[in-house]
Length: 248
Image (tube, rainbow, N blue to C red; front, side):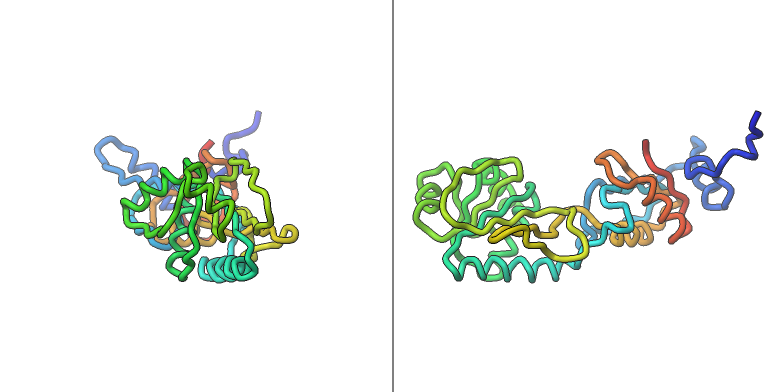
């Protein structure tokens, strides 16, 4: 029979160092824990919260999951959009709620004045974003009278979710916003079709930085969305010396 002292070291079971001991001891009922659940977040604009236990999103927890800076992505995005509009081609942007509204607001700040057209669902969500301070400018539902006329006759930028199929005819530039493009701001998939490295999640370097700033006694890497929870926990221990374990 294998002796318990001969068992392989695991992230979940090894509590030898002092920081691990302090985490275990705080589980006594008379000691209060300050726990922070990050959910998905992007580092810029997210407050640092000192805590005892940090439950950290691990969607992009692999060391290879590193994107260019958001400034580099913004620069590439505005260049591609302006280039398409100058040649008379509308732009169709596909992305999830939140990312789409960020891009709409960014394009307005950069002086893009053509009308925006969104799917009905994106339209309703965008109205909520405006209530909370987003400046989105002129935009219309693709199923409204004005929206349908713009799609038929005008130069515009349209926004849809990745799962919304469109049957719009004519020549246009297609852009897909994704968090799964690393190392470069964009790639050209085919003529007039681009994939943009744009995400509402922190990449690997930002996750490590946030964990360091929060300075918890223990980190639980959250695998609820799928990702690299085990690898991220290993890297937090190795790089920061903070005990970490992956969630199931």
